[in-house]
Length: 379
Ligand SMILES: *Cc1c(COP(=O)(O)O)cnc(C)c1O
Image (cartoon, rainbow, N blue to C red):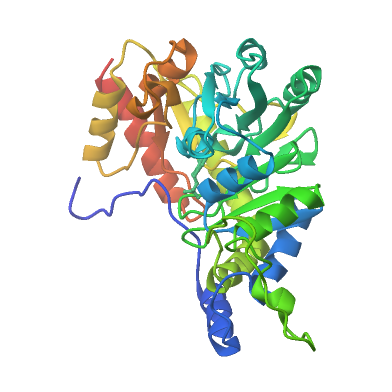
């Protein structure tokens, strides 16, 4: 990397004075803890954004996934079919809920669970399907729903990266019985950390709401009471709350969402032009019936080029890049697993290049040139 140039970063949040002002407002209000007025406002707005009747803000997506599995009634001995190509928070939540993840191989073009592989993974112990929107692009939810209905299973969407995406005009988050989002710093909208569980089913969200605040109704529900309501503890809950500081940031991020999506979309378009047809690279696919939120832009490197060597060469020239995401079945934590060749191949050959809403035209051009030159130098 030359000294005169800053490196182009892989991911970056878009936050500024508006978020700072919203945080200052929370400081003045005195309600810094979670499940307060800012969370309540965020939950109402987020549910509208993702097209569900209810939303619960959570500490992160992992806790939303875990709570979701709990309120769906997952028990030890149950099996849950999980899309294999994902950040392993997905499989972890299933294990943490006491059940066994059964990983399903993925579509070779968009890397979400292949419906045929999902159906093939079902056994008499299967209770549900946890499908992942890879890089935010929704999976085949009409097909998953048909499979779930045929086998009497629930359907859960890991929508960690999907805020603002659509599937057949329906927003990501509204495609299953439950969906979980992440507001981690690397996602499209962020409070640093954070998450949400959304559903049309009030019973599920109400149960999750109690579980996320130690098993009792949040304190805000007792505010203004003219009696002295004293909650009692009937079940073992957790503290999985988003703080009101984070919710205030998320309220600003929701205002920004359309602009952030447009910025990412324009970067993706420019990358397509730059990389489509380049020998040794395959560009990511946006299916015609979905709107991709471009949480990541992932190229596939031809088998005859070393992805790792390519990544290092690109990094040397000051452009950050990385592998795509994980083949869950290859992670030691899950023990010996049957081979899932499509997911293993994606894990070996994917290359994520810088994608965020603050990229300048000059940076996008630099990424395009650097990646193309690095590919040429290795072919
Ligand atoms: C980021 C991510 C998660 C984990 O989100 P946290 O908020 O960090 O818990 C889960 N699933 C997928 C698909 C992700 O990309």
